[in-house]
Image (cartoon, rainbow, N blue to C red; front, side, top):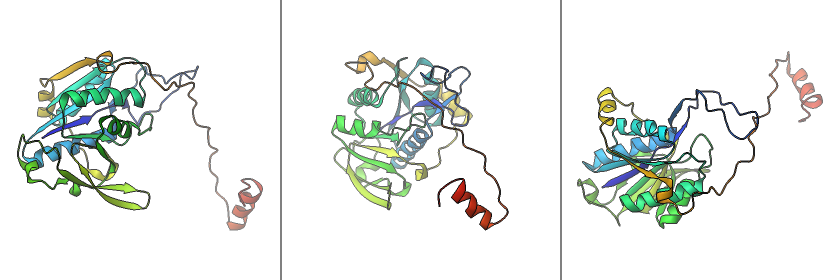
Length: 264
């Protein structure tokens, strides 16, 4: 069975992001990049599914600038078997990314695509749904329960055997709680925070990752028109919030809520 998992390079969530004076983009000098945390969860789940099945292949794919291959190598160090890098230096939007991924999927022919539910740099969360629509595949989003990710077909436990046409039960988070759904493979899963805890790349894994195959493609090779459909006009930092204060008693609090905050 073959698993294809996305790996997006994003700004480290632990650092403070600065916007350029003209508001066109963020300052990228001295910025540290990491694997999108939701994609790390997707990589971990693909590895667990492969190991539980007794074999198979995990292919990690990223779309982005040349140095995004560092984050792709992180997925390989975690245990992915090989990588695909669609190289581009231009701005991307979900439409372009989903089109590029669809071409990669057509070439790789995976049984299951796993991807983070969203990227922490733009928080759009649209690529999974767009990719499913382009491929005509079923999709389960916000998958959050690991124990339910088991195929009903025993063929899934045999190394190298495709399970296309069989079903997969997953538990996903919805507004009202948890929902159990069944998808027919091939399918797309987008992963949520509580699905698993990603492993750290071991030193032997890091050394092996340097020798693993990474196939490079150009964006123009996989999309018909590389022009983004979405254009960012301006970025602005959020408004500064006033510091909180302490009050002596409840009557003072009520007075301030009425006269200053005007919420009562």
